[in-house]
Image (cartoon, rainbow, N blue to C red; front, side, top):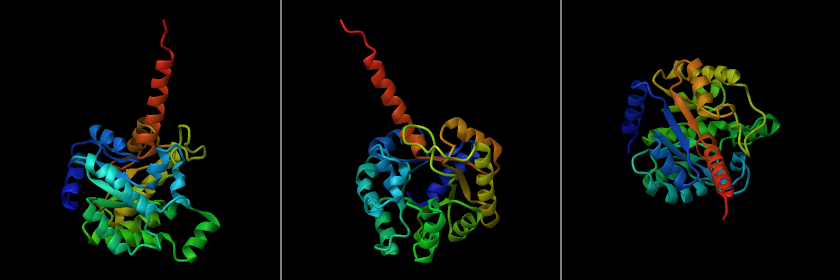
Length: 274
């Protein structure tokens, strides 16, 4: 599926008054079920594998595996079972062991419709983040990855964490912008520290407005932090302007899986015997 077709579909969804929903998938089953539910975009990246193995999503930012190679491996599980939904690859744009133009060509040839910048140094802060920027592993490489992907006619749906990054990604050609307001809360391995929903509304709006000033047609989806359940997303969407949907990863696969399996086993355990 080419970029133009994907964007036309997403814009038709917005024109119809429906939200654009993106879903992270850590397994083929997650992808199949998300598609059955009507998802508009599926994104696979290394944190999906860790998350569905019962580890926190931030494991994807630590040295537990080759993030870009994990995405290539996950492709063989996800791409064959997705019938009609564009699948995007999470790309670690700061990877110093990849020739990024060739890697993006490889992903396109495998059947990915686009990319997202994950793992992202945008989730780091403090001195460590400053040192990453100073030693050539900064967010600017993620912006460059998006620019290279755009040149290759891949759909780009980058995470951003502040208005300046939103502007940079819009200028690089981002099609779908995902303001990220932190690690998703709730569930057995969700974050305990997060913004309030009202704080999330303000941050998402600021990032959306900065990007739209550069690219008025950019599609913006909220993500993360306290925006964990459908009611949370509804709260944010009703209080922002120009935000047209939601991207969920833990919200789409981890939380529902935790709840469903726990409830199902409890129901079996409560059966009467004899």
